[in-house]
Length: 80
Length: 284
Image (cartoon, rainbow over all chains, first blue to last red):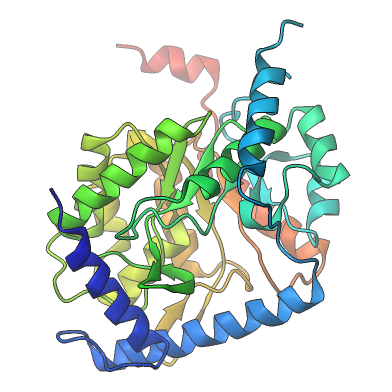
């Protein structure tokens, strides 16, 4: 069984460093982490600005996608 | 509902965005397109997309938020969303990335590289198999561009993809620009390493533009294709001449003419179709 908790901690530490909320995790090239972090933060800012100009992404209450999915599957399997 | 159209061999496509919709609609050479799943609601699809579907243009659903490389398992609601889109658009494929997109309780807002180790591969394979079981159409997974490398990486990108394909029936979406970016940023040969890939598992390819910034190659999807991604795409098409290829552009839409030039450049990279006589001559 893979150790998902270890991987989760390592990914969270890298993300925290990229968001400038923590140090670069041990062994990472600090220059790479610094540059990648700036690019990530620029990207997040750009996406946020675009979101403000566009309609919000689809947000559906729990279960809506499942109901739609059932309907689409029934349509596809219906005799024509 | 009609069966999903297959992607025709030698198809060249362009990513569908509101800014490219008109060109995708009227460019006679478009053989496929791709939509970003997170930007669409399957209950309210734009009319131009439905027109493309009804014309039989293959529309691939491309997700960016599933996090197949996350330590956690894929969110069933996100999978339902991808599945509903694939059914509504009659898609031949859903594609996603080999990336992690959230850590702890935080969303990255971008695609981040997974550590290339056998242990991470175990998680990735489990997540991909969960996704494949949930989706009504085949799944293809894409290599991403990275600016940071894990110190614990023990496998090359090609070896990681080869092992993934050995353990899962998933297809690959090979991004030539991402491959070039990583080769440039981490100092390996983009062309030589192609030979180590499971080329027969690639369902289609992406190309895009980027730029150099502070000594790094950044995959921007906002610039014309440079020499590096072109070289990778050209070498790939030398090995797989009929592979469908899709151009991605997410920003700096500087007019139809420049995108048409990029599409023509992709077509020009393909080796010519051998004449019937040549094929006959080549038979043993």
